Image (cartoon, rainbow, N blue to C red; front, side, top):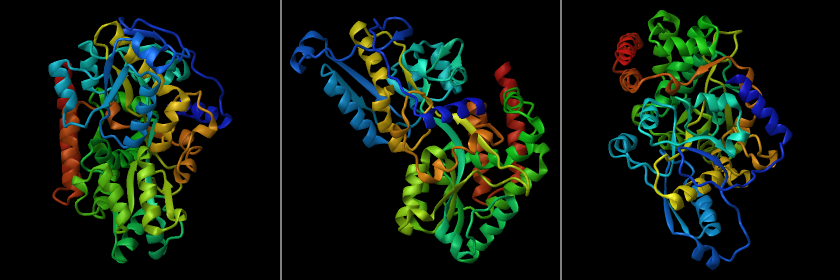
Length: 449
């Protein structure tokens, strides 16, 4: 992961040149190859007369760049007037419904979860490994989203965990720099609270972010013990990871949880941005994909972008390196359901169109993410200053994979409920860790059976 991210960032800085060649494909095979046909110089009327009209459905779970998606799809429909694109509303447990009905949207976003694997097994997701865009993605990233030989799609970007700061509050509490280790972080929380502010918040209602606080704390102990990301991941996946074997991590979880903002357990990512915009809380832990909203919120409430701070989560001991958690973001997947030649071809056209650098930059700029495609030029990539400052630090930072790369659905649900009980002050870290330990073993043993 680190090697791939370092390579990606080097390419981005050099502003790699190149574009996507365009080829046609009949779209009937589960494995798709080539690119969609380009503009032939025909008029809009001529194009529409020659093609069967098609409606494509695009589903993005937890959309955080709806304006950019609407603009991209509008541009696509202008170029391909016989194709109508519908951006669907987010729905609770939507992919469970898809598995039950087989009614797969044409384009969607998914991580390689147990749901995604089941969808591959059911033939609902196409193998995108032969698409043009995959020729511009590191094989390491493609391997990370491949199951049973099916590459489910291209990750939307590189994800890593970040601590964001309202530096105006920190300065009021006597801090002119961000905390650099766990002792400084706890002291900063104490000082902020003494000034009448809440210290920390996170999106407790989103499993990835609920788990993020614990996994970043755990990484400083367990990650170092296992010695590599792959060894840690393997132990997680086979149920042998000893959550309860790192008492210092458990104690730190208790100490940090005491400073969490009331109501945090019900927060979505949008709620976290709103909390930071209120000026009542000093810090939040979140994925870099939320940088645009969070940094904008801090800038708005303070009136100055200079008050936006960010660092890798400072949960390590003094003198040790900061740890983070990393993962490819959820992938843009394409339906593998055969809906006829015209529909299949239109679906492929849209998929390739999204990833063309001049189009994908709309999504990248809106979300402030680090893209994994290597053919975007440096002027097409826009990152918030706070995140840009970390870009060189992330490849060399010790890390483990984000939880969604390892957990089962059963473990995810029980573990995040236990953690939210700690964040709300209704339980202890020790109780949550013991619950996670038992659930890990049962969940993975049940899966093997």
